[in-house]
Length: 288
Image (cartoon, rainbow, N blue to C red; front, top):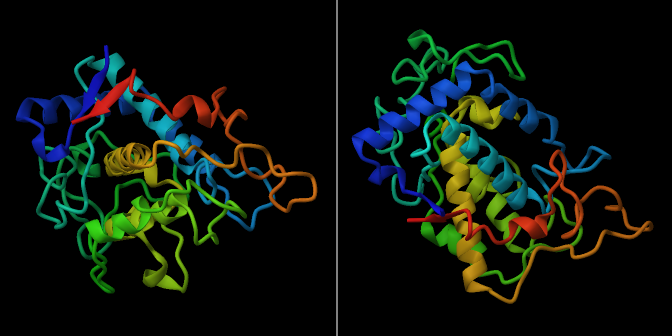
């Protein structure tokens, strides 16, 4: 049966409770930290001369789609009624709106050290100790809106900039491309600092704290954010039905991107699945 992913602001109290409970149980079982490790391990950048899968590459969208599915399956093994909701950051745009409520993800970090002190994922609640990290900090951190250098979340107009492009991606298939839906949504723009953070990337920086690191999965909002990013991919697919994942074939031996990106029918590490197999998930889930 096809399951439904809902807007987080439409979850009932019972649905919120069950989603949080399933996340905490997956963490208690030790499964959650494996998702963090996988994201850290596959978070290579343009300057690194190895295969790129999670970011700065065409696989950004199918890779995170697969990661979301894996997490969702883990949650549903705990409670079959649970799915991963999405956070539409073009509409719920303040630190007081969903998902930053005490019965969901908790709120902002405190001023002194950005430690999250409210909600079920606060360190002091005793259920969410960060053990897989790029620093030695064991508590969840956030800096919603970046207090010292404020930025705004992306708008519907910003999303239209990405959704209107009919090409999925373009050479050289990295963070420098200016043409293509993938990078316009992923958000590697020109310039330095906040002006270069577009769409997906800007949201990570708006949340701040652990969300700006390779260990961003440690903040449960990661899943709600990427669920919305995944929804945007489905919207792009519907708008441009004749366009597919690119590159269709691997870059040749004389291409500087040879061996560094995954083509449409190639296996996408760490899973035995291709981007082509993840383009249509209508038989698995849908968005409401």
